[in-house]
Length: 108
Image 1 (cartoon, helix red, strand yellow):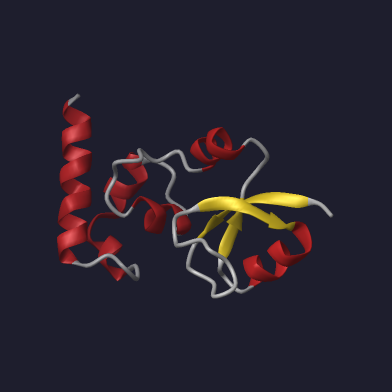
Image 2: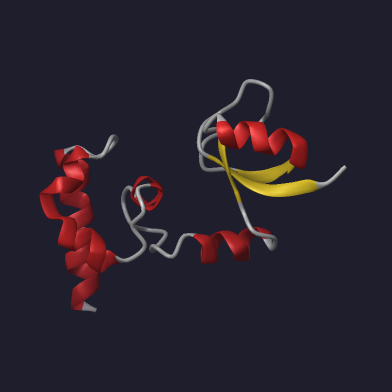
């Protein structure tokens, strides 16, 4: 049976992975898990594919949340400004950390 590379968005009771982990799942099960919001199906190539899949810097606070909301550049994140706080999982503290990260990245 075919297998696919995946990144877990949240833990599933039947699998030994946690949110943020990457792994391999049977293709038939992956479709249902994807539909239910448990994982993201990655292109072939594992870690290298994951890095290409999410172009945001790995150190960026809230990286996965922002990427899942469609952000792929720091400029787009900065342009959104305070509206980022409307995203589930981003409160004032996280927003401040994100903006501080972007300001520091722009100085380099």
